[in-house]
Amino acid sequence: MAPILVTGAAGGSQGGTGRRVAESLLEAGLPVRAFVHSDDARAAELKDLGAEIVLGDLREIQSVTPALQGVRRAYFTYPVTAGMLDAAAVFAAVGQQSGLERVVAVSQLGSDPQAGTPHMRRHWVAEQALDRAGIGAVHLRAAVFFENLRVAIGDTGVLALPLGSPDTVLPLIAGADVAGVGSGVLRTDGPVDPVLWLAGEIMTVGEAAEILGVPYVPVDAGEWARTAIDVYRDEVAVEHLTHLWTMFAAIGSGHELFRVTESIEQFTGRPPITLREFATAG
Ligand SMILES: NC(=O)c1ccc[n+]([C@@H]2O[C@H](COP(=O)([O-])OP(=O)(O)OC[C@H]3O[C@@H](n4cnc5c(N)ncnc54)[C@H](OP(=O)(O)O)[C@@H]3O)[C@@H](O)[C@H]2O)c1
Image (tube, rainbow, N blue to C red):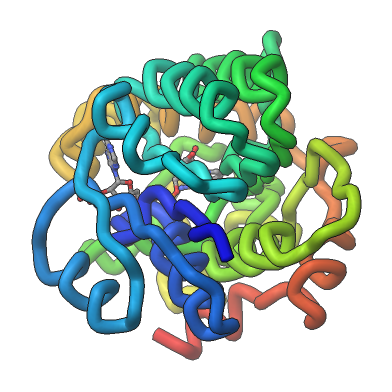
């Protein structure tokens, strides 16, 4: 059987979705080619689990070409940082040449040319590049990861965000559910909708903070951006998140996209993970 290429397979601080997809496919007995960015302990663990390891940079065609050799299905994820469009364009071009038949790609809930953050607009462009390559793209347009709130809290003991009122509504999801859908789609032979909206729980930021056991503290967006760079150490991530939180504050009590979606249960076979379950699991 052809190996399934899983990018972001080492996992990272955003959702670890690639890592979870790789593990889930390996547990199902499927051959996994794990694309890793660093030759480190995470890669060694994947190798021990039975994955074939390929090391490279997704922005570099000379890394992606051998990685996609003989592959028919792939999971594509690239963190919120510079280079996502380069990576998507390379993956689209090489995937088309190498005969890729399905790629499950992580995107964001509001991906659209008019989206409220520059990175969401880039996600829409990345979706177009993958679609036009005719490689069976399925886009996972995911809500805010629970993990994102945990990173925002860090060791501060408060959830300080520029979200205005504690009644501002957030669409949320566990990284594990994004990965569960990704793995499920990769194991599905029949047709799948090219766009899957993924939200597992809708709640106010005040409720989310309470579940995570900390107070919510509204802060000014400019002030948040100035301190966030020390936490995220990435200008693209801070730019994206500053716009994202400001956008949610402006939307306030909800948007038509803010609804729990059936795709999670459809592809994982269980209800979405709740924030309370995520918090309890630690
Ligand atoms: N965070 C949220 O709230 C949220 C919400 C909705 C959608 N999303 C989407 O979720 C995606 C990210 O999730 P994730 O779970 O994959 O993130 P993650 O857990 O941070 O993992 C990112 C992986 O990509 C690897 N990587 C980084 N740069 C690379 C490069 N140039 N070439 C090859 N690999 C590279 C990292 O490896 P190293 O660690 O070795 O660099 C890491 O293993 C993004 O598309 C984002 O827009 C996020």
